[in-house]
Length: 466
Image (cartoon, rainbow, N blue to C red; front, side, top):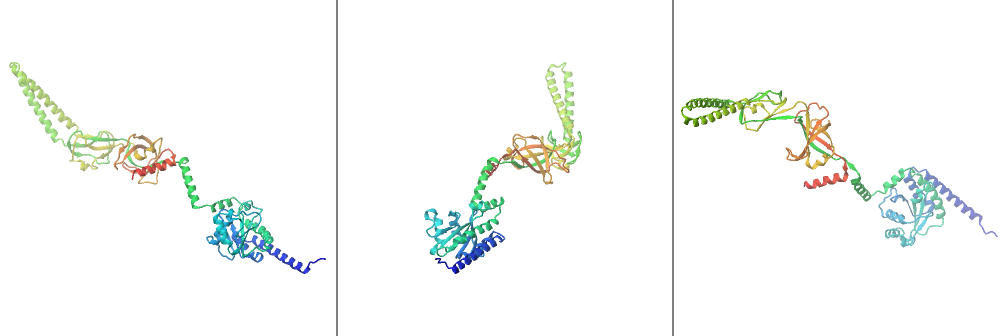
């Protein structure tokens, strides 16, 4: 005899149909959400009528876990104790294909760390039960490895009808959530970005710097001062002590070989010449007189020898005075541009000069070169064949390529009281308006060196300079 009640069966069938319709409607609505966050809000809020939970949360376990949505919450706060406990506990649980029920005793304490056990105690206080369902999708292989977790919280035991409904909803919800996850290579990049922490970035940069010190080559470039000089220069020095009578040319005038530049005061020299000539005539007359008398008086032969020496001495004095007079006018030994030591012809006229003192310079007008003063501490850049570019202070925007003519192999003390190696270079480009004495900055680039050598060498030099 059949004890079934047709009315009760109809009621249960209607309830199941309504539940199935609700599942279909909820799943369809999840697919039409505009983004991942909206889908998560839909899942945790609209499923309560079917699954009758007290609280619900949706977690994204990709990379660094985070809470996407919470029941009845407009904005999720990741730093609340509830959110931190969920992330800690779910990060250690092994979730299979089906939902996992978490209670105060399940899973066993030995499978959890101390922090996870504390999180479970907080979430299951007052006898609460958690039902954690993985939301995966067959479309994505990543969903098996890093699923979305849907956490349902109940005050007491989980109702029996929840299991069947949750299985159907999980499939639809999983497909809907993974629909909003990018499937291109950018997804892995975004996931990697979410794993970045300050410590990881610091360690990565430290490792990259350590490797770069031994593998990366950088240009060894230093800056040095330079000055424009003539291709050749002749300096005139005083041949004797004297007073300049007049200077015929001004500073900066062009001169030709043989042009008179300055003249010494010769009045004293002329007096000395007249005195030497008079002395010679007197001595010569005495010599003639004694020479005639020596034929009869042999005692005067000794006097005759003394007069011979005096006459020679007078001749030397005459020759010396004539030499001074012949060199009283200083002429240009070469053609070029005149550069007076005092900077003005008026200052040179009437000035007493001493033997060996420089009077003027003559710069050749055939071309100009640059002299570069490389600091002694940067001398390693000169090894090999360095590349050099000049930048004048007056025209810093114009690089001037050069060709090295010569370089000193020993340092010299510059005007700034710094020892430097001097290079003479020829400017390859025709620079308009170039004048002697112009200065600028030279960029000297040597052979490439390893980054570690370049940096630590600079640090050592900096420490030495303290």
